[in-house]
Amino acid sequence: MNLNKDYIWTMVEIYRSKYYSLHQALGERAFYLDFGQKTIRMSLCQLLSLRHKVMSISLESHFDGALNKHGVEVLLLCNKEHLFILNTLEIIDLKNMVEHAFVALGLSAEREVLAV
Image (cartoon, rainbow, N blue to C red; front, side, top):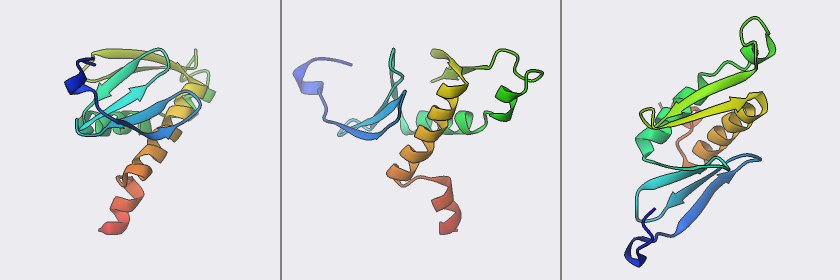
């Protein structure tokens, strides 16, 4: 993030979970996902892609040793710019955060289905 005073935006917290938080930069049309050790700037399209990837992760495989022997998930974000290796608890929390963040933004899948 550019620290030039002309480019400092007000950040609004959309949702905070145990491991993650999502903020929106007012006036910048960007979202910032804080993974604790790293913060990623995302456009709305990248955030939608994150939602698709996270919701596609099968939690059942984390509890079946034959499907996911080590109980970890590799997550590539923003056109493979960022790589995260997450354990089962972090995946559950990320799924929860994504679901609640999109509800807070008014972009939840349940709302889209009801609007049709």
